[in-house]
Image (cartoon, rainbow, N blue to C red; front, side, top):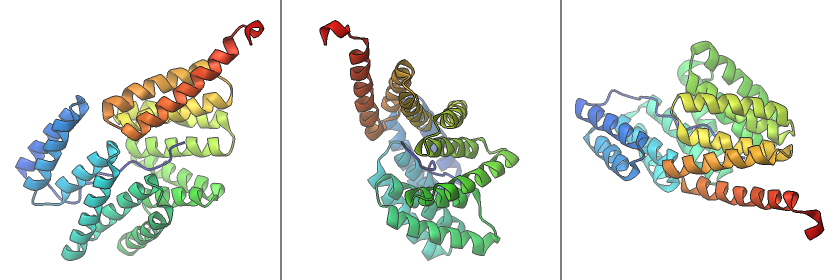
Length: 274
């Protein structure tokens, strides 16, 4: 199962006119599946932007396409820039997102350290935790096996996202709550949360996240022996991961589909031929 908050592209400053045009072009190219051209446009926007927003967008693109080494390099550079310019908002965004990258790449301990620093910065600046802090702490709690704390934090975050009308945040929290339910063995609850996350992610055109929801739904259907549904979810996920350039998830989904197909083959084979 995949459990991680989507990389945030929250604006830390207004981009220049040229950078804004390049960023819009990059987004359209990415939406059309032209990933190489999109990366070039994001890189050009980052170079043209006098604010750090272009680099934040480039880092988020690397995260979405699972180029985690490139994403980590960008977020680390943004952290240095934040320290040099005393930009607390940029520091917060960079720490949260670098922690997300580290969770994806198996560096849980360092992710927890960064998350703690980001949370401390948020409390110092605003006096209360934001949804990114709640979700990050929840993911770290899951890593430590404290599933009850993780659920409480995610539900708090979900309530805030719904109240403020943040559909992307709501989708993320539903996805993580669904994955958490599967860890607890509650497949029915997991399916409900994951289905909600999938529909929200599709509506928002967050295709990599939608494909991840499908992969987790396939795991839930497999747990309850709904083999055909599991296979269909994985087939859709594979097509979407391929379109998004998410090579690592594509490999994982393909391997899982092969397992499901082998199981279905055994189950449908004439027992006299076994």
